Length: 79
Image 1 (cartoon, rainbow, N blue to C red):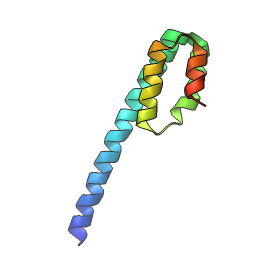
Image 2: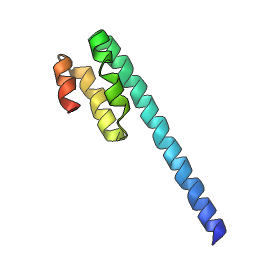
Image 3: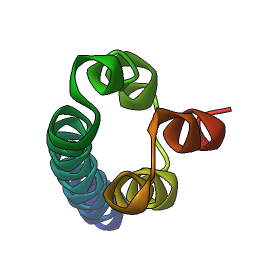
């Protein structure tokens, strides 16, 4: 009953906390990559990216920034 439910809630909270930590780390990497690779124009995309919750999508954005030839490639993935 109640004890099992309490542990279930605790585990879910830990999992959600871990996911949020991963998300925040990815966002920092994306911000750094945008600034380094694309400058001020790249950083203008950052507010849109911070609204993303999907960790796999954030990883894709991070990886794309690394190989993107220009800002248009990054804009494409944000559509």
